[in-house]
Image (cartoon, rainbow, N blue to C red):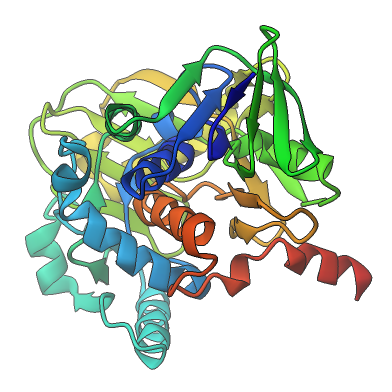
Length: 374
């Protein structure tokens, strides 16, 4: 039987980030991943590193995480492919621009000024390939994008370098409280024990929570992405749309990534996803309408990851309401990548000191219990 200070279930970005920050605080950590680190949503998402358009409850965490992203190489010895050319939501009408103005004002009222409305002149300077009908947008200038799988691997490798034990390719068959510790029985017969358990199991996080009597309403979903052949350079910022579903960016090698949250079908029991080609076609039509230069682009690959979306669209972060020593970090609802660095730090703070200075009350698992009993 192996014993450590903290046992983490889940080798996505949030699990690996928690492992890194805990080892930096001197804890002995064992992380278990049933596949390999970054196999699911963390490693195959669009790589958006954005504060733009965040749920207001997430903004303080997102702002703090962006500070870590801008010195990510100091943290994990790898730049993670992070580039900061800004993120922009295109406005296709005066109504869209009004929505951008309302959002910017709402954010300023909350004490944040990183989202700015830009008019058509600046929009054309930043995104010259946008369709003629685009009239402006909403920008967050220090946002950007990174390479997801490389990022997860960087966090995993740095955590292991600092002493974390990483077990991949072995599922946790059972986990339960046994007196003062949690005991996890692995599929290969080993048992791991630790007084602290971190549930970072992504799409499978709801199942872990349910083992301890906490029912979290999560859908297991499969956000889809496409990538095109190489195109001549035409775009630096990451682009979305104010009133449509879109995430759109061009890599330095010329290929173009198209996403935005269109969903395929996920089977968490088999790790399989099935693409919905009708919805991919809708995604592609949006791109053709907003970027005429993409009308003859050829899509060369499409895929989908598996992740969890909560009923209210924001994650579960913080201590269990039923089990002392259990901490949750899952349900990031298709936008957890940018939050990975800071949420790992938050989990390490909570485990080590019992508190954090960042406002995590909106992410409490208890909100669902309250909702059920109201």
